[in-house]
Image 1 (cartoon, rainbow, N blue to C red):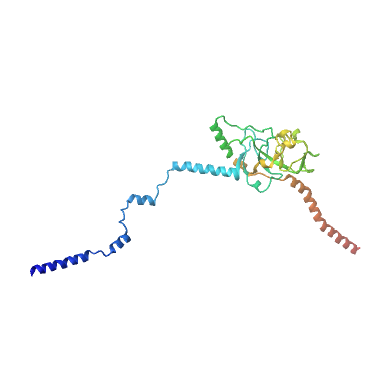
Image 2: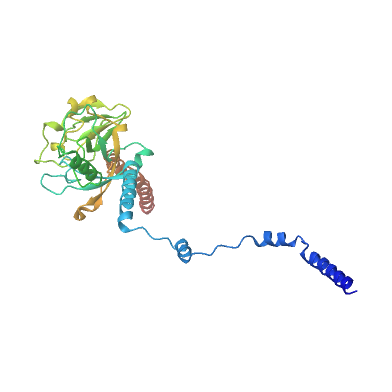
Length: 311
């Protein structure tokens, strides 16, 4: 009896254990939902992600210098450039006298993208191949490194520019006829004397360089002259004058806008139009006289009628 009971009890216990051990399939679901146990975070890695260590000053300095140079080159190439006046040819408008601190002028390179130079503009241009005279000698070292630094300094107006960079004033443009001089010693364009208050006579009186025969300026070129008429190698004499003396419009670098150094010379560079001003000198008084004639005539008639009535 006892043996039978014991065997039955053992069988029931084994069946219960099998039922408990039977998989339900939920274990896999739980594992998939929870995923693998996360690895423990390292404290230092978390802080490094939140705050990166800044670069040192000595690492950033070359980067800043490089960016500054690139921006400078872009500005100098497309927008504006500081130009050192190296000679006396534009006295007294621009100072470039020997032994003095020459003017540094800001040259606008964007203006002539929209229109060609006009009479009266003070322009910086690349010397044409036909120009065989140089008004100054650029001081450049034989050492290639020093010469490179001097060229960089010239970009900022800190050193003499290239000998091929010239500054003059536009007197006549393509299609116009220029000559000098009339009875009063004035330059004429299309037969009309010009108004040139900016002209400086070094020595007090004109010399032989002032006079030149009548010449029609070809299209796409400029006739330029220095304000210091007695001390300027310009369209009158370069290459013998005439066709060899004109400057192609494509050679123009930009328009002189403002004197930036020295501080005592801060001022704009005038672009007095000598042709327009000369026309206004005659046209404005004539126009005023024409307009004033109407009220004068009206008043005269009224006065005449009044006097006749009284008589």
